[in-house]
Image (cartoon, rainbow, N blue to C red; front, top):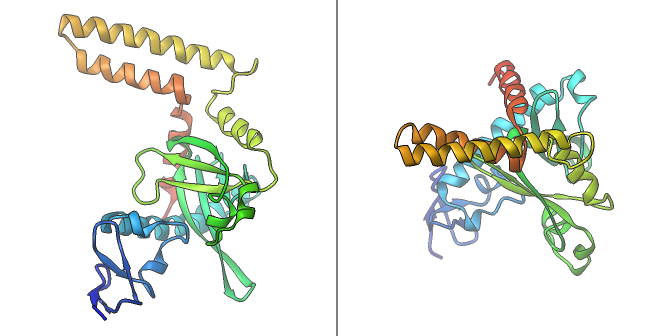
Length: 253
C-alpha cells in the first residue's frame, strides 16, 4: 500500500489511514480528520481550509464554554430551526453545535463553531438529504421529509456554511426570526427601517454616479453606496457588530 505523510501532524499513513483533500494533500483519519466537525467536507477542502476549520472549532468550543454557558446568557439562548444552532442576542454571536459523549450516552458535551450574527447573510430552506441524514453522517430516502436551513456567513475562515436540521418546525418561523433580527421582515412594525435603508441606498448610488463623472472622491462614494445597498438587502448590522465586539473583548483565549 502506498504511504503518505499527514500534512498536519507529519505521521506516516497507509491507504486505509489517509484522507485525501481537495488540493491533493493527505491528512490522517485517526487524529487530524477527527479534529473537524462531522459534516465538514475534507474531500473538497484545501489544507489551508482544513487547518482554518480546526482552529475555528477549537476556538469556538472555548468561546461556547466561556461565554454562551454563563448562566445569564444560557437562560436567554434561542434555538431557531433546531438543528443544534444556538443564538445569543446579548452576545451578538451564534453557534453551530455538535454533541459528543464521554461514555456511550453519558457525559454529554458540545463542540462549537461560533459566528457573528452580523456575518449571517443567508438562511435558505433546503429539502432532502441535506437534512438529518448529512447531520448524523448517514443518508436514506426517509431524509427527504426532513428539510434543513442552509446557513451562509461573510468573511469566515474555516466552515463558512452549514446545514441546520429543521425537524417538524416550520422554516417560516425560523426565517421570520432572522429577518426580524436584521429589520428586513416586511411587517407594519419594521417596514419603516426597510424603506429607510432602501432610500439611503438609492441616494448613495446616485451620489456615487455623480462623483464618478466628476472624478473626485469616487472611491469613498462607491464604498458608501455599496454599504447602503447591503443594508437595504440584508438589514443594518451595526448593532450586531457592536455586541459581538463587546462580547469578544471579554473572551479570554
